[in-house]
Image 1 (cartoon, each protein chain N blue to C red):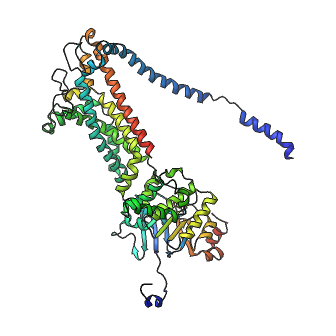
Image 2: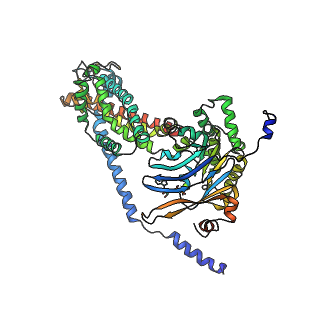
Image 3: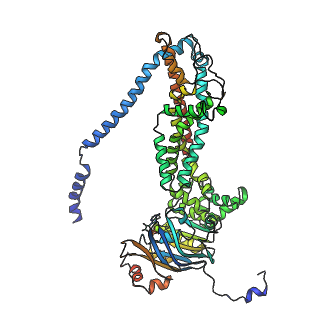
Length: 276
Length: 308
Ligand SMILES: Nc1ncnc2c1ncn2[C@@H]1O[C@H](COP(=O)(O)OP(=O)(O)O)[C@@H](O)[C@H]1O
Ligand SMILES: [Mg+2]
């Protein structure tokens, strides 16, 4: 409210998207894994990527924080902008990108360190804090944000491997949140978890949505329907001449629309369970 | 229905899961494994039996410390392995200090930094072949480089420094190979976790990959080191001496020196009636030293594995 009257008169114009892709395609060597990806990711929304295995959901997701850079053969074509900045511009530093855009993986992958050190790892490297009360605060806030604090506050020094699978995954979420990202990319974060642990992660996503923009890959349509605001459906197409399977983005729409009235037949078949 | 069937079902299930088929192939395989193990152990026991009595006899008549602390002498009852122990221990430290960092650095480069192309594949192949080159060839190389060659002014010629450098080159391929394997064994998901929170490649290597590979890297290095210290061949080219001019000052890197395998090979050529006991005793000392180094390796590995 510091701006006084001017803040109240500002028109709430359309919020620009966080990400925009234009004909994004990804190759592994000469193999075109996915093509024709055109979508927009909106702020403080949960966007789900759904589709059968191997259609390139993870591949596309890993472009969004330049994680594909780690795979030597991976190559990106088309445009991917983050707040209007071309993410694959030469001047962009992928390390900086990954600090702003956190990632949670399919299998919980805590570091072989204590619970505390798992969270402190990122902030320490980023120079947010070294140790002492400042770091304690970051650790506590991150664990609270990931709804894990109450379960682990008495054993912060214990190994992260002693936690259950669901707790480990929430620890990984807390670890990602600790460096203060704006976006959270989640690649099938619940596929290794039981339904109760899955439910807790889904609740958590709803809680943190006001502060973060979330993209989740899931092979579980019910999950996509439950948690997401927008939904992108991918599938694979077999190319006639080269006999290779390439992923394509079939449809991108509001989740409600996608599940009640899909515009593409393939989407309809998939969401109604007749395919995939 | 279900009640009637349950007895039948139970009997069928029992017949299925209680069947005791003999597994001849499995038993034979196990037998072969045990036979191999016994053969290896028998060789070790034979070595100890052939060496131990005469060697232990020397320790008991002269006292262990007398044998360990006395220098060379032309009189067998006065000759000890002091200079050899000093030389071997010093070169062990030298080799570890030179070969470990270089080998680990090379392995980190090959595994974490270099892209997978024909050049790195060639380098990998060459390293694997170098690991199989006989020690005497490394002795010749060391002679050409450090004793007589371009680096002789630095090393002082026939010195422990030359020996340490030569043995370091000898173990380097094995250190690189085992370190690379230890690094490869670190799961990719761990690296992804690090990169995912904005760590640089160097930070991921330093804070995640190296600590997790440390146990394997140390074990490989120390096994290679223990093997290298037993080699006599390179010592001939390094000018290890078996006379009163055999140094024996701790960490005198650029003076005269000797080492245990050199002593063993020298004494074994002397008249057996007088020198046999000393030779065997020197072998025992070498064995214990090598065993000690391996133990350090195991302790270090356990230490690092526990920290994970
Ligand atoms: N590192 C890689 N190297 C080569 N091909 C890959 C790699 N990762 C994935 N692929 C291929 O790319 C396609 C898309 O994979 P992915 O993005 O993992 O699909 P999804 O996450 O939708 O199951 C698949 O055909 C897969 O085999
Ligand atoms: Mg996937």
